[in-house]
Length: 193
Image 1 (cartoon, rainbow, N blue to C red):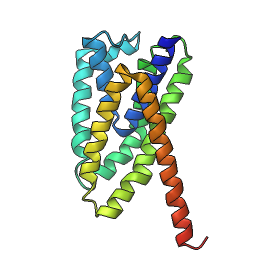
Image 2: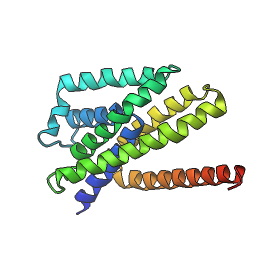
Image 3: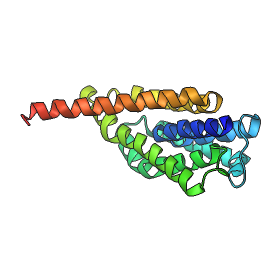
């Protein structure tokens, strides 16, 4: 039972991470599965440990890293990633859960898709536009770097300390919901509604 919950918590942490950066959690899972005993991927997910797949993930990670730091290109990247990040979240959830044999694949893929898609939606529709508006775009690069760091740390911790990641994910989600609610109320008050 503990292993089941640990796998689910890891999967949720990795999916949330995919909402920030599609390729970092996939790369973390691939590298940890190939070079450590922390993750054991079952077929067909063990394809992630292929040298070619790891090389492709490194290239895609670098492309996303740099594309997200260039003004105007970062908006195009976010539009493209609207489709990629939820799919990456679904894949990493299913691959990393270690409960893929315990959970129906459609359920695990759906959970990852919804979580990564939700994180990406908050990032792309609320956080990034607010940063752009309040800093004139100057804050986008530091925020993007922070997102990459958070995605990397969250991905690693999701595998090593999954319960901690679950707690942090819940706290961050609660904070974002509160922040968006507060922002909405301020906007309503400003317009006199």
